[in-house]
Image (tube, rainbow, N blue to C red; front, side, top):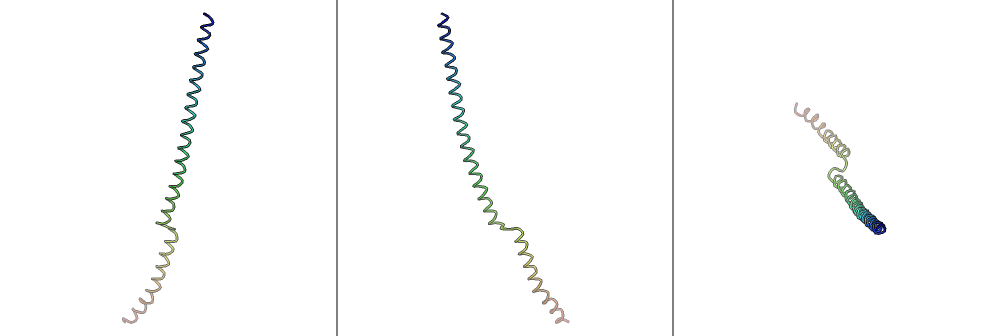
Length: 93
């Protein structure tokens, strides 16, 4: 009877060990899948960030250059208008 009790206890212990090993293996599988999903999402995020930066560059290539271009246009306009204003005032009088 003592041997039977030990045999039952040993079988229960082995079953418990097998169950724990199975749970560990399943957890490792879930972890591996989660890591793969994270890698895929990070790659997609990087791709979208690059696409976003590309589109922003198309919409507003360089805010400083746009400001500089506006200033150049204003100077050209001022340069064209000043002679007309000063010459036109003398011709009116």
